[in-house]
Amino acid sequence: MISLASDNYAGAHPEIIAAAGAAAAGTGSAYGDDPWTAIAEQRFKKIFGDDISVFFVMTGTAANVLSIDAVTRPFESVLISDCAHMHMDECGAPERFTGSKFIVVPSENGKLTVEGLRPWVEQEADYHRSRPKVVSITQTTEYATVYSVEEIKTITDYAHRHGLLVHMDGSRISNAAAALGLDFPAFTKDAGVDFLSFGGTKNGMMFGEAVVYFSHDYDDVFQYTRKQGMQLVSKMRFVGAQFEAFLKDGLWKRNATHANAMAQKIAEALKDAPGVTITQPVDANAVFAILPEKMIEELHKKFHFYVWDNQTNEVRLMASFATTDEEIQAFAEAVKAIG
Image (cartoon, rainbow, N blue to C red; front, side):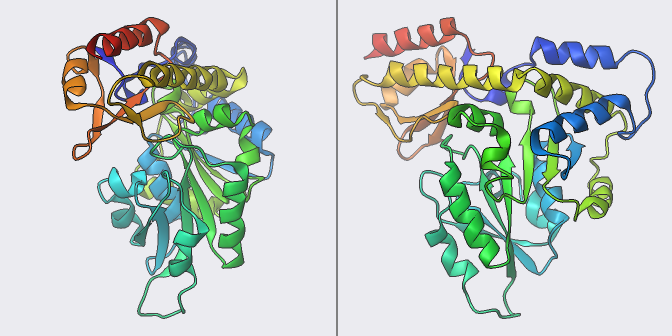
């Protein structure tokens, strides 16, 4: 079986494995007080500037939940899209651990808009309702679409005018950067994002995500929040070593560029197939398409992928850093044979 199900299914890049192996030699102080973590922190500061704070955790759910928990109080709310990972796939963890209300806002191609946010942001203040505090956007979105810099600035400017913070769930942030052809600050810090969940696992790391605040306002709070949230890793050096390898020579970019290119080839294989409709722009490393039911059945014999919407037969086909040209060629031949 060839997997086009998720970039989570891919293994780890050999350079990541080598970096973790090198960190295994000898001893190192625990809980992040080690040279590997310090070097990784400097890598982030080289990218985003010295005026940031970066903290490492194990999972994307932890990065999202704990970073938001540090900036909110239980009577405050977080505005997210109707397809956001925090809404659909985190098992209620955001609400349980932050105590805040997460309000679902209609999206367009997976993206939040000011028009969608307006009814919640501009309602009259009333202590009978939770008070909006954070807008969270996902880059890339759950539909693998990518916010432009202008779209992000529009949201951050609006949120800041109304006293809200903006969080970015960047579990696939490398794919977004590769798609935009931009460095990370251009569509995060420089575009007005206040804090960020920076993903590594989906793009070649074994495990590990980073929380990045673009100020030092939450340093003290997050230290305690991370510990209470069970994400202060004792052998943090293995996360730090991976991120150092991930960032130092552009491995993140090579991996993400390859995954995005493979998705384009998937789309090309489907483009002229009878009865197939590609439903979203193919901005990054996934293709969403409606396929005939018979085609889904036949493809599932050789390829693992998810049916995203059983009512419409919309599927998600996802590429990773490890997807090969040979796998995509096999997929293209299978589609042609069925058609």
